[in-house]
Length: 210
View 1 (tube, helix red, strand yellow):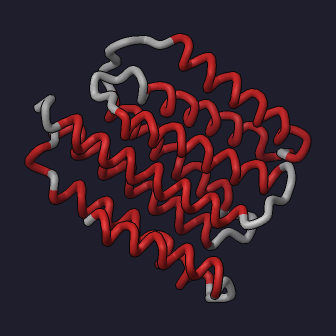
View 2: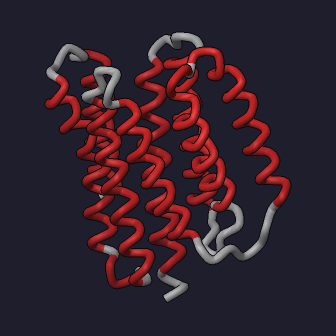
């Protein structure tokens, strides 16, 4: 499964590099295949997961896939739909991480500090997207922070949360601040790594919390 995930992710990234002119529906299909495989991994790991974790992970990944499609088809109008889908996805990731074991103010302050810096760079160009982006960044910050504090916390979860922040920061900077060379490649490499780490972290952690 891990090798297949790497192959599917690499195929989409190769398409971005070498055949970016493919039609949007085809690109959207290839973009969501790695997330679809993660859903299969969760389904195969059903017996080692708590019922709540199983359900919330499926919802988190399903809304991520929806967000991928909306952003891949983005003509400007669909961006906020993609943002909303990932907002819901992070909400389900947060629910999956409950209960919280140890509150880490240092982690919260670090992620909040980084979010404020990035938001200040975005702010002049957000216009009508100000409120949606602000709420999304807040939800992402909470999700990433909780990977350190959940009773399921492990290295995969922490890495997944951190890399998700990196991926979305690159996306936001490229869209609202300064065009970044090969931003789409950096975004997708970090995004796929983040999703893989989160799912792997939950699969490893929840088997001992049944």
